[in-house]
Figure (tube, rainbow, N blue to C red):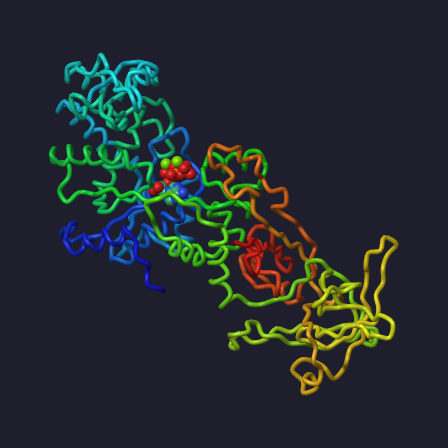
Length: 574
Ligand code: ATP
Ligand code: MG
Ligand code: MG
């Protein structure tokens, strides 16, 4: 693979390696983690985080853990755990190393988290607050106003401890009490809102997808995350920019518990990077869910969706997504990455390896009047123009053929070298039917609406591609075609951007108003007959039309349905 491009995280890691910052007996010096919450499907933003975290571990002889951050029982489900595991593996990564599985769940740490919470209470660093949620919100203040201490802030340690145990025992209703940190005497006046007595535990009488009804109190993300990182000996904990203000609390939790003997130095460090925003899509789970729930798309795996399952079904390869992530790199400033960068990566991945094929998407009949009815001549084309070892494909030339509608012009514009009819004593144009014969246009038919319905041609028997006679014909047009008698009729789905606005949800805009009504066009196409054997997930370049995949859901044996992944060139311009 190409040398990984440098970025600020690599610089940090290389410094740490040189300084021995995270050197520990029997452990790699780089341990990262990908910590999804199992409350939805992975999207392209998660893919970036996966490629980054697993990629750093691979490049620095470390390891990367997959950790489910499952502390919100109401929103989490096994279905999401399964699709996330599947997505990470499909992208080309594994949490297994040297026979060990580094697959973790924050819920596996519930006992430890609870013990650490009690420790913080006993050492005066946490207290049970009994204000109502409204009072608590009001007393927190805001960016310009310091918060007000809770009247319960100085309640005796023993009282907090008893209340916390009773919370755990199920003696209270949701929201009646909450466990909060007491970072310092004047923490409620901190300019960082995250330091104003942040919540550590809340009461939730809810069924958890793994721990069932064992718990009715659940730890908060900001408490769980640093502890999970420290338990797993994570060295570099990479998150997105919005967590920058949470870092002081992350460090405080780990410091307090390290002083309390729960962890040993060196401890994990948090680093922040910009989120990935891609033009023409949304990447918030809530908004993606809305598209699914309102039937705008057919499901999480709809090929228009920027989810990992959607990209996969659309035909994107894991390699193209890895290449995309490598190219966009990581930065500390939020920016939009153009969708064409992802499409470019797909083209660069597939061009050197995808087998070729011919598809006629908007068919127009061609009749070769001097070619005998019922006969055929076998024609050949390379499976791949630069990989002779892949061999040849073959398909018949017959009296009736399909070409693209746009390959005939009744009144040609300047520089048009495809089919044009004879005018007066000027003969019609001559073109090569690619891999077949040179033909000359002799006429055409129209229906009552003036629509051209057939083109008549005569062929030159000695002009077949690959035969000595072929060189005697110099033509400017080279046109793709398929035999009408032999063509495979297939449904082809032409996908376009899901939104017509490059920034559908920027600045709080109504993203649903920006939906692209032409995001999907279904055509009944005529394909080269050999494509009947395409297996689900098999990808091709259809000459001039782009890259296509046999849909992994709707294709059946002998009857593939194709999705266009992307066109051959970036048709969207700058
Ligand atoms: P969403 O906002 O879509 O719900 P999330 O950040 O809440 O996403 P998590 O399941 O918590 O989703 O994310 C798991 C990991 O993926 C986190 O480390 C998070 O930083 C990272 N991640 C999520 N979205 C992006 C993104 N757009 N760009 C980069 N990393 C992301
Ligand atoms: Mg999250
Ligand atoms: Mg989020």
